[in-house]
Image (tube, rainbow, N blue to C red; front, side, top):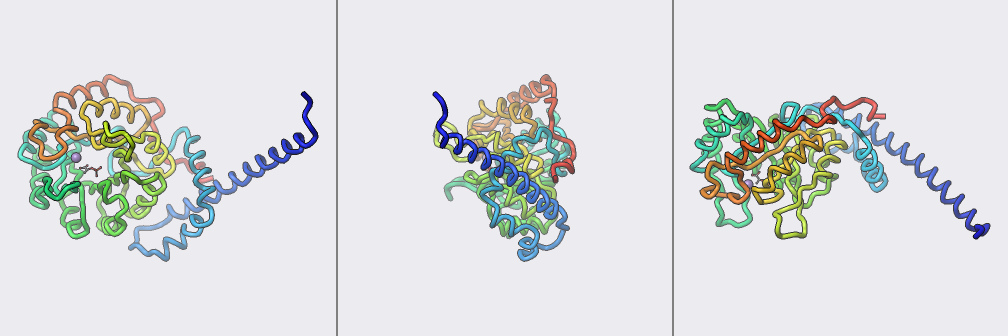
Length: 339
Ligand code: PEP
Ligand code: MN
């Protein structure tokens, strides 16, 4: 059947819209890149909202809907993206340890050290859903964690839950963790930005990639930042959360931050941790945080999701056996991505 004249006309109009969209997209991407370059020039300085706005504010307000589309498409196209220096060395870092500092800490850490784990995690202040659940033993627990890590030559990642304890906690940790529940606690982020410790910033269970990267902006340029995808709220109660691997890869590409995953909190099930660690590594991410306990049944929190030491050992064995992914994204951010 031959096309009607008005169909030709419509097709021509659609084509010119497509061409215009493409040109607008290129210009917006360029504008975004220039603004990003400006943001990166931010020096270590006390937080000043007016200055932040001068640097980046106007672009967000006016261009946001279009930028979202352009950024996602750009991020998804980037084959190798570079990251800025983060909290961890380059390569794939495994951070392991119990959910909370408890009676079995020393036994767990001694065994982790024998397995070659160099980054230790454990919570001293535990943000819990119910006030009657174990809350952690605070600063005393963190001091014990530090002493234990020092005994085995390990480095410490531990959560800082409030501004009140932040300065004391930062004296004892190598990396300050901002937990999922505090992922948008801007007062805490500003406080940590001023304290100088590298930060592991978890993603909030309902944070968009944009909100997660927005939170990271409070720290970027002031302290090294590593992002941690720990599962977002899904609809299926058989899993604690849903590990958003695509969101983690996209955040890494768009923000240029080292990005790791936490499959323990993402799934809530010990048996699902290993395959997701391997998946994160294959996806070119920078590491994984896993909960491990010498005797999970005695753990004061999150025992169901804790790997046994033998399970961690076989995961580390599987990682050693698998050759590193070819397209690891560890090169320095290319200037070309700034347009
Ligand atoms: C944790 O890592 O100990 C923790 C509480 O995780 P999240 O903040 O991701 O729930
Ligand atoms: Mn936990």
